[in-house]
Image (cartoon, rainbow, N blue to C red; front, side, top):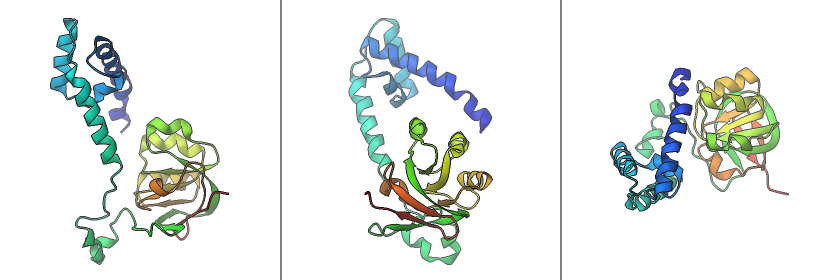
Length: 212
């Protein structure tokens, strides 16, 4: 993972520079829109830019793709496909997320690191929000990978939507000695940034406290 990620920071800067140039010439609405083009479109836009020309129709195309991506991000995948496959005991124990009652103030998941902690939540949905992590809070996120490891130094606990006993977040939480419950399914949808929550890493529950 380390070697795979090494190339991304410089490549991203190059892509953003190209995006800015295409924005300046009138092909894109903003430099970030470069990530909503496929390679053939990028080459066409770059060729047009070389002649100081724009392809304005790409503005509407990238805006449409952005909205589609945002809509897909709001979807929540089922624990199994088909949904009722979880009725099979040989499948049930392999699930990476629980089905929780949306009206209950207590969510269940997989207990992966022991201990109990009550603290505010830092809701972090992606690396773009890493700066919102606050020391002494409970990290609430979809799932983690090695890029998320620095956040654990500030976390008092961990709650994720997906995961299992041997997942990245579970292992790192045990290394840091913080309570963790993973595989809650919809914690990022139900827990607000700054909301008080209680994580019980012994039994696998996450209690949501009402705002005072």
